[in-house]
Image (cartoon, rainbow, N blue to C red; front, side, top):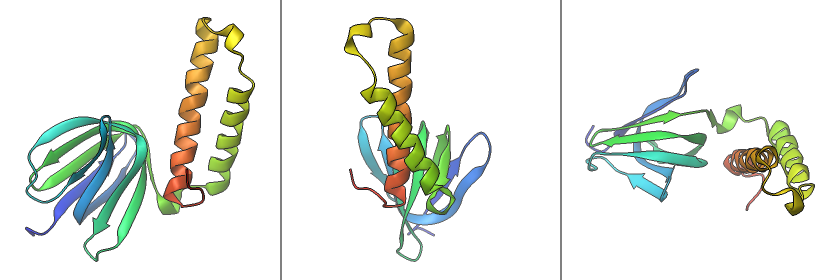
Length: 145
């Protein structure tokens, strides 16, 4: 078991991943980080992005992560995510539609309206929706940004 680390990815709704893996690479708030068995203990916040791991058979797996927290221990990585989806669970057409909606909202925004709280909040939401859609599509390798 010393060659593997336990990866647990959970959301408020469900457990997404629970398996022994060789390495975990996650989108930390300060950049991507990797964890191998025996890693030093740490806790960090996560960005929206793609979590990658190498399973016991040497196959790279990808999981969409919508922010949250990661705890690394010498023998376990726990990801507490706002939401998360395995590649097989991502609806590509839905993600493409969400990306198109976000792009329309952002292209239709006017800098003249800047400074209005509602407008600023709409822009923040559109950018977040765009990021989520892009990362979901990256997991299924439909687009390369």
